[in-house]
Image (tube, rainbow, N blue to C red):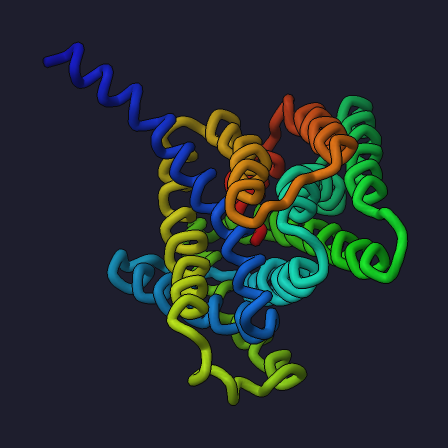
Length: 312
């Protein structure tokens, strides 16, 4: 019995990491399909309205305390992590391939987080500076490799830059989240920030079709929204933080590095996207830079490792 229990326990961790990586990889693929069918800003607002409602319900059931919440920090986190990050990411995804996004965003978030952490008291040592430089070189390679001239290339470049900006927003959000986590639980932070972010996103929908088209959305589009809200946001968040609490942030962060690999495979099979070989090299360079940035984790980087991959 003990041997079976040990085997079962040893299987739980990789299954948890794999399920989180698969959930977040699926968000890039389904997000790309979704923005091809419905307006990206409306999709993002509806997604977080649903996710925020579910997270508040979970917080109520679990009697999560919001006492002592630093409202200013939470609002700033909602603006950067949910409003700006998702508006930029989904609009960028409507202009560039999903493979670009997954090579740029999850891999550069640790870098931007380490940089933002310097503003809340964490020292940027020589190793991390090298990591930032290496990751920047990789990101430049990913973006440059996707440009092959013509109007389509300009559109793709804009999309890539928007997704890079979304990564910067998420990294700064994570650094702010570290401040909020000093007095709140992770669930409390997200349960407050997600609905506030949804309220911020809501007016942007009127720049598109003003939500008048919601009734005409196909069943497939609604399934994508529900996947993004329930599976990729709420479910993956809960499983990921369970792994962080069980194994620590450093080990749990391994799932982050599975996401580009899994997403590229799915994008090739489902969307027929074939990344340029130089983009793959650039992605590997970014991961190397991110590893340098986070190989000696401290408080703020550990927080980043507990949330970076959920950037979309």
